[in-house]
Image 1 (cartoon, chains in turn green, purple):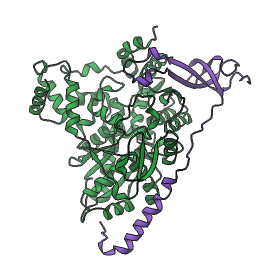
Image 2 (cartoon, each protein chain N blue to C red):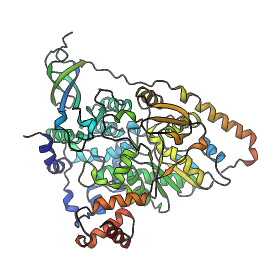
Image 3 (cartoon, rainbow over the protein chains, first blue to last red):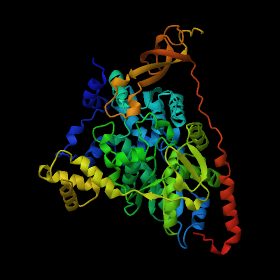
Length: 467
Length: 109
């Protein structure tokens, strides 16, 4: 068999079909439209089924804590009457230490049920450990493919730790240098082993996160007798936002605002060998958040089930320094040593809660385990070794890859709003590439309206402007 | 250099794509370097570091590559960062101060 880069990439659709056991083309409904809800319903599992699957392996049912001291701190820096109550869902309590156990649980269950001998995942994040842990429980083989090293052989400490965790759960870890050809290695492994593609972006993965939204809705209602006013979600590939928002809707929280938050890494190229080790966050950042928001189908499956643009009410960014500062605050004031990447939404929440009324509730919907390599001390030590300046000061002076500024006061923590309409324009431009308005069928226009949350009329108007 | 016995847990290295074989979309600096891979497994036959060898991985795959070392260790750690050290105490002091000074303005929320 020809295993050159070009030949393997040319076999991509065939390999996908074999490794997921799902023909995505059956959901195509128009020139560009596909039946998203139909795909979720047919290939995914219902909320009740997912709850049952997750109970089998101890996933979910994580505690929710009120962050009393951080709420108090926010109220001290808020205008009179402002400063919402801050809650946090302790997803670190999942097996493997992050919400990713939810995402892995359904994929691994489905792989086992449909007769696959093992699963493969291409991930440098917590998802690897989640897939490895779930595979260990269900007795499947597991391979995790990671992007770890730059060309000097220097490994990102957080990813080294995540690789160690995968090995601790009995997985085989394939470590690579920087580059998008990780996907090529991933495809070759799928072909060689016949394992299941435990992609982050299948309906299985996304339906697994729906329980997070539904659970937190139930917990907030039970404890406080009201719906959460806002839920802040760390946003990278879009699965956390999509699954949580779908779960909230299924629980009937129709007025809860879903706010995405990413660490600002603008200016750093995600596939650059030189930039790779100049970032102190390996996920939850704009390097994934923005491209996946504006074009979700860049994922490792033909149709991405994570479609954040459909669910985000607001999208904000924070700086690396602010997240490290807040991570320290969470440990020191609330006794929770977690993160840091998962605390991106917490950093944003401290600024957002300040704008909200005192009787409102804002939920930070995840934490993640911490440890050697991941911890702020590890990341900042590494950053200094890579020539990044680390100092206290005004966080607005952060420059991704050059300077990390840790705030001197909590009142300095702020968010920068990302223009969602700009993201919608960018999405639309890509979606209609090669088509004119006349080419598109009514089903395509409805699909684009669902994707952008614009009216059909607005979609037509915007397409006219583009052409 | 010491020979590594067969059956040892080892790390092997290989080049997956030479610079000229890399994907067209990679940035210029990445295009200058090869795509490299490291995998761990049990060494099939005794060999010296640098030798071309085959290993059996924990999923049972046979993989070949250049032998790097036996018993590869984890070396990532925590470090210490003085810039983080005072944050906790500062925040606690802020809360304590406000609790005394601003009793009237404190809300039970």
